[in-house]
Length: 149
Image 1 (tube, one colour):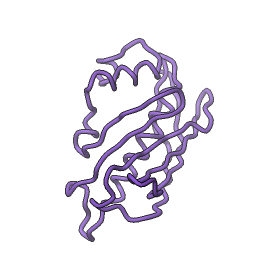
Image 2 (cartoon, rainbow, N blue to C red):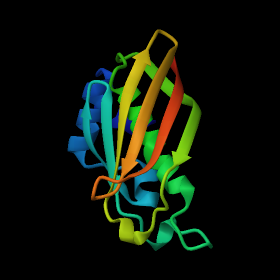
Image 3 (cartoon, one colour):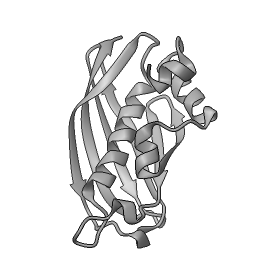
Image 4 (tube, rainbow, N blue to C red):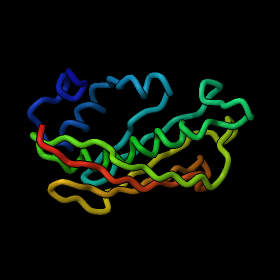
């Protein structure tokens, strides 16, 4: 069973995500990479995290996968917030552009995702990843498949 089904079965996507945030429960990916889901409204979702040593690659910067995961989460949950109680989604494509290196000195990172458009079978979203001073570190666009559960 999914965490959404455990905490918010039968609700629409926005209500599911709001209930998940209020519950304080964190999906495994948030635990393993140590970031948080903090805001959601229809068509918008926000994640934050401070990259620590766990996110470093061998060349001395935060691994691009850390940024990509925050961006993918923001895009996906922005779409999830627009779904009915009987719909689900999965990411089909994620394109990430890295604008600046991310290090432990970047401080609190904020990934904000927004739905660009959503139809019966496909959704399109974008997200930005910014540091505590508002500098753009990475951005992404995503194509997502919308399906019935």
